[in-house]
Each structure stands twice: as structure tokens, then as C-alpha cells.
Length: 256
Image 1 (cartoon, rainbow, N blue to C red):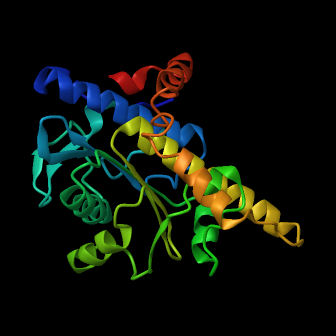
Image 2 (cartoon, rainbow, N blue to C red):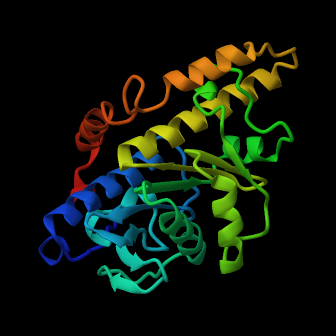
């Protein structure tokens, strides 16, 4: 199988940035492994440690299963390229518009993940949106919503996107897809994985064409409280080493 030959960036960045690159590349590979990709579309970003105005994002033209630590772009919040990887591709304009807006507004957010999965797009098109019908979905009882305005390439949309997201961990982009954020890559991945799982369960239940039972509101709120990172544990952190081991058993090239 043909592989891209990409020059290593390890000696050109700080140790902290390299670690972030490896983890972000792993996140791309995991999103691919768990079936949440749209070929070369979509984007995942992480803020560069010690450089709050810079973030890493994928080269637009590579499949998620091809992403490596050295293939990631580093750009600033205005879209200027700070580090160009050894690839022939550029950056997805929509990726810059969405991610720069959130990184600029939400200083506590390090990682942002956006997907176009069939179940995410389906739920995004339902008037009801995401229902708190399962324990997993109750984790996101405060999911945000953003109305569809077309392909997100206009800077004018950034203010509305940020306002709609507010302080939520996940947002359903109406007629579009899903978005999750987190203070770290592991936590953001946990959010998008569980949001995806919630959408799948909802659509399966709705396909049964039977009445759906929802818990009382106080139970929904209590369950949501128990999923807050400061109550029991920050979900995603404990799972991350196991997920990396899962990747390493298959292919370690994301670390290059």
C-alpha cells in the first residue's frame, strides 16, 4: 500500500508540542477506528502547550487513518501558518473558521472535534434534537444547538457559533453534524464518542416506532451532575492510555 513520506517534525518543535502532536494524531486515528469519519472532511484541533494563540490541525487532503504527529499544521487564531508540515496539502477553511472562533473564546478548551456521521447528521435534523432518554445522553442534558447557515467558511458566523456554544461541552450543528470540546484531547474524544453513542441509541429507539420513556427531570439533572468532571472523575483521562495501546497494537505510525 502506498504511504505518504513525511519528514519528521520532532526536532523542530518543543517536547510539549510533540506530545500534543502525538496525542492529536492518535485522536484522528481513533475517530477513524470508531467509524466517525467523512473521508478527508472534518477536523480536530488542539491548542499548542505554552502557546495559547496557536493550535494544531490536520492537512486538508489526508484521511484520518493517515494522520501523523508530523503531518499537522500549526496556525494562529487569524489563520496564519506558523508551522507547515512536509505535505502538499493546505488547511480546510471551515476548520479554521470553527476552531479559531472557539479557541479564541473558550480559553479553558484545548481540544475541539467536529464530525459528520450518519447518526449525528440525522439527530441534528430532528426537531427534538438529542433526547435525554439514556444514561449516556443524560451526560449531555445541556447540549447546545447552532442553526445551519451553510458551509462554515464566513468569519461572520463565528460570533453566533460561539454564542450558541456558550459553556457547553457539546453542540449539535443543525442539519450538519456534531461538535465536542474538552480541556484535553482525551476528554474531548470521550465527549464526541459518547455523544455519537447517544445519537445511535436514540435513532434505534425511534426506529422501533414505539413510545419512548424519559426519566423524570430531577433524575436527568442528577445524572448530568454525576457526569461533571469534578464530581467523580474527568471522563476520558482514565481511558486514554488503553486507547493508545489499542492503536499501538494496530499501527504505531501516528507517532511519527
